[in-house]
Image 1: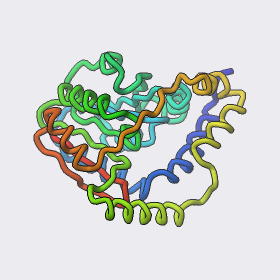
Image 2 (image 1 turned 180 degrees about the vertical axis):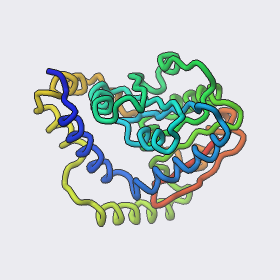
Image 3 (image 1 turned 30 degrees about the vertical axis):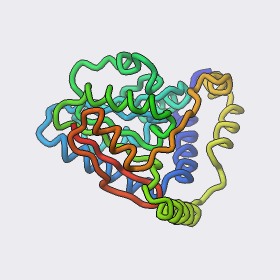
Length: 250
């Protein structure tokens, strides 16, 4: 059964609401990430932007709206989320199915020029440390000089006592802002019952979505990996709780 625009919009809206459960001040963080990309692409003709682990394309769509002349690729491993994005956001984005970190994953994107910016929101924490190290290096090789990697993710501060306090503060802020009870698991369970989504949702249920290996890197651990990968300047431009926006300049 073909997915209708109405169905896609309904499920994308529900996805957006449940994602607020996992990201403190999500819209503010997106705005900061877009600010960074806009700043580093001033004067660039048709900048090329990658959104890694895009889901339906929440961050990618905001990048496209901020930079209308840019080519924005929404990259994700899940075909259902990509199809929801195609149906909801339309031709403003180019959607590519790829598993970030797998050997050759960047080749699947069909890049025809250096990348101006790679962004990611709450996705790269899925990668184990060796895969993340390789991914950082591969991205550094594809970015133009002066290009940026902008990672908005769950990253612990280095001091254990501060990390615990930051985690508690972030959780309190999220709970105070929630307006629905749906979480990641219940979204997927409900999506599987929609006839228009069932075929693609089944691929998720069969385990075709990549497993979350995860890593326990603190902020300094990410900074070290990024510098090792070849990024000249690395630092945090925004933070609340464990939610950071880390910028690495090629």
